Image (cartoon, one colour):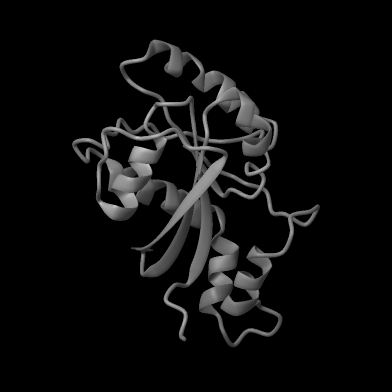
Length: 183
């Protein structure tokens, strides 16, 4: 079966329990909204392919549990993510205040970062596609070298798509590339 995308990126949804991470994910991947939702246990994920600047990007979006008891599990996913969404509930000041704690956790692995701000609503579908697309664009910009290699198929020593994809599934270690952006 032929591959239906050019590159694979992992994105991560972080935030307190009940702020709407799963609702954002379902709205983006399935265009569905379920107002009554059971809290995520541990970590779950969905995938979607989008096209950005002529490049087909397969996005693997990890939905993490916001409860304190799952944070040791959640932190294991930080290193493998190329982009991170920090999610809070606009009607909960406490969830907004906890964003700094989440940002601090992420900052342990990524010292320098830039942030974009999007106010979103899974219920009304406000800025869902735009925010996921923008984060994907930022990840693509951070990985320009790899993308240049994807386009230069005749250059010797340049990894091909299959090799880059194979590398994605290798266990993480010291060879992991730095993660340059999150929002």
